Length: 456
Image (cartoon, rainbow, N blue to C red):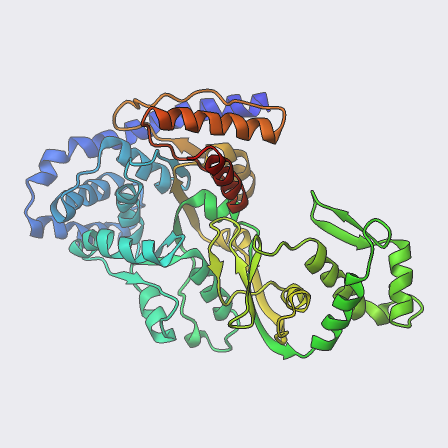
């Protein structure tokens, strides 16, 4: 591990020096490009495309393209990218990840790299975590690209096939990771090439890259169909598992979130359903329903992982990362139906999976993948192993005035939370606003409870 970290540190220092050297000619062109008229600056796009058509590479036109996009930023939106933003863009152009501190202008940083890759005419997908950001960036950054003569598309959930096809046909397309993934799955289900909406997976530039490529990497995108009516079996399995005794009939591992029948529980199942061997191939479906009922009743937590919407007679999943309700989403493999049976909700017809892919497997299909975020260095080993991408910490434009203290480690969660609350109380008394960040909604609620007890 020490060798790995040492290697990464040396690689960082070496590549950052290379990047500084690479952007130096861009900085030197600042006054020359400032002196160009709007028409002269716009003419750079067809000029650079002609060079590519004549055999030049993206590296060959790097300096001119970056200088063009940088000057366009100043003219169109009144913001002139700093040298550190050029460094971040150069990192992304190299197929890696630029880690930039909050407030350093990641969105503006992407413009230079997006512009350069879009000149190939093969399509650049700028991927965001939600439609608000896609709409905002396609309007804001898109204005710069349109000024330079590039076409910009916005891919939204409600678009028709024709509208999606038009959005993907643009030089640059802003889209969310989920809609992009589902479009890919739908394209793989059509029988005619002309019915596809995507024209290929050339370049993906991912915002909040750690969230999409690491946190949600194994989240499966699923398209379902072919409904099956198995409601009665879910109800029977639910009634059965509700009568079981913990540690006697089933074993629960809270840490790994697994639950399984004991030998005694298996015998009870065989007696209840009047069969000889629960694990016989003939009873595979029954075993599956029992296992899902066990998970629904003893692993899945109401008001944490899902809520019961009694008014609409449905189970609504809670996003574990944001705490938001995900209406219309369902767990797969019958787990959703098992939870409905558990809560006495009308059981919806189970569907068959027609197509599925994880974000991890999907994004590895791109010819070039790069990204930006404020926090990715801690996952660099995983990025390297899975995506062959380095994470480079881009320096801030100005020295950071903030003091970063070393981690405080406690023997128990209770001690940790008590120390945290004491710190908040002390800061609050001094009139300092405090932001407490957690990785789970339930942790936020627990800290909120402790703070209320201290009248904060």
